[in-house]
Image (cartoon, rainbow, N blue to C red; front, side, top):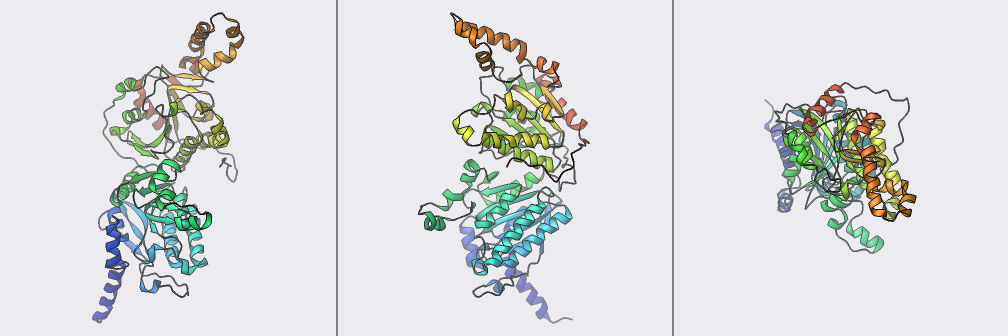
Length: 514
């Protein structure tokens, strides 16, 4: 028999890893409403499924002042587990160990787990709670951060990558979540910034706080960096599980199909969308009605609210939805909404998730601010994303579809596989009022009653050109359908195009107007 000391030594090391920085630091973590690194993993994965990798790994950089040798694991726990019976790879930074800072050893572990995720074609989840690069390792730590960023890029479009920010995520390390597909932030503790308050104060003399620089509200409402935000660690990690339920394991796998019994409520759609094009409404109930079980996982709800994006299931199939929101800015497109939708579209296309566009758009938002903000370049991203996408692409024109914004919202000429329109739909180059004002300028100027004449011209113009039957007659839409036929026709279209193959010109890659 072996000497008992071997068993005791290993058990002590395992206990040290689990305790991280010790009971006092764990208590501080809990006092801030934060779980420990291992507690977070246990809340994320199926019970008993986690297997740690390189738990005894430490940084081997020979610098004075480094205490990594006192802490096996070096401030991050990495390994794999299961979520709803499907494999995932995880890294979880441990703030109780040297502030979860990134060292050479720390980054080596993270890079290896990302590479294993790529090799095994399974999602990678990064749980972030770190002060950034470990200062006493200097360039070694900085180089480690760079290696992680490179690994994120190599994984992009190969496997889903989800970042969960449950504490600080500072400096160059914040670029890792930014390179991933989705970012989930804890409302109070989650922070992301390149330069903290002290650096800002020293560099430019500006007084600010960490929350003002990079709190969850900033990134959910203003910057658009984050996609979801929740009250505590447990809810943030639960959202990861929910999100993965809509995603395939990798780009090689078809979207995850899930059987769901659904009652078709499409007959209620007519009541949700007013035929008066000037009357606002919320597009979300339309999405709920089309989706299996009325379930819709909305992405970036609080940013660029004039467009709504997210995941539904239709007939068990995961589908990405891009919808204009008439309740905000009348559903007009602008620079921010175009970028928000374009990024979502490109994610869906990378992972073979069909796209459904729900269109009710009066155009691009006009004005000096829009033009000077680069709406031409930034708005072109939406055109590029829809045009580039090779997954099944279905469009339903709910009400109005005008001008360049109509083209950008997955028009037939941009590559949509099937375009439907409801009978109330108006498809035109611009609003009737705008068109008449230009085309009939002289007659209106010479008229004794220009307002009455303008209304007459508008009515004539709308009757001749605005109805969906004119658009159908020249091949711009495929079919006019009734609201109660909506869900069935969308489902039929997705099924019809599920084996779609597109021939792409040979090239290194396109050049999206970033």
